[in-house]
Length: 327
Image (cartoon, rainbow, N blue to C red; front, side, top):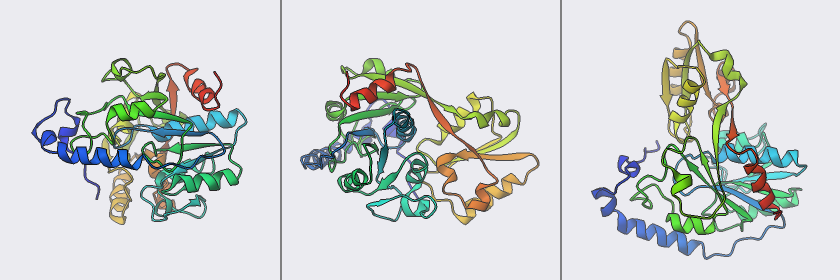
């Protein structure tokens, strides 16, 4: 079972718990900085990293999928690199959806593999070598901003506009993986996903290019309006999925949140099946959750895809121009 982040992480002001944990946070900062001194592998093709400075989901995977689609439309052959969080395979290996399961390689790699060849492994340098040899002309990293094993051409810091940066402290005193200043020095762009409730785009004192995008449900959402819906999700912030449904005119009669990368047990499936038997009830979930469900049960669940709507449609194209060093 994955523990939920402590509440004091999300408080804008530092409380006693955060101050007491500052020595451990300093040790964490030292470890991250020391690890970054390693010289990573220099791939023969451009490398774009969709990363974040906070723990939890910020929208990195939807961004990676959006950029992969744009690269393919430009005629490129992108491959995706992922750690394979939650999978038992250590890699390096290529994800094969017809062969691997979420228990093998993790949920996100299975989802990413539908869009482009995807490789998992803790050492991104090793997976980059394999992907380049397999024909990739550019590499997209889903997470790995703090991973030094592969040199990046373009690093994008992805931030959740609905959560912000919490209390601004490093783990375990706060939600940051490293000091914000350190991350900003290595990033080439910032993307805020969702409503910018903490005014990140205006308060971050940096000259980095900044863009904003919102998650929109796919067209399948229209058939659910006015229906009895039970929604469930095991993502970084399940409430983002539930809020997205409500904003699209779908008001679930029940919302069931699960931890990020949750592995659905037989008990979970039985519970959901009981709810689905109620007259007129439709189960809905995310594409990331659907890949972890037994196939027979998954066939009875409506899967809601998501896409990014950019405030400035030219901004993602500008990011790809930067990747290939075009002004």
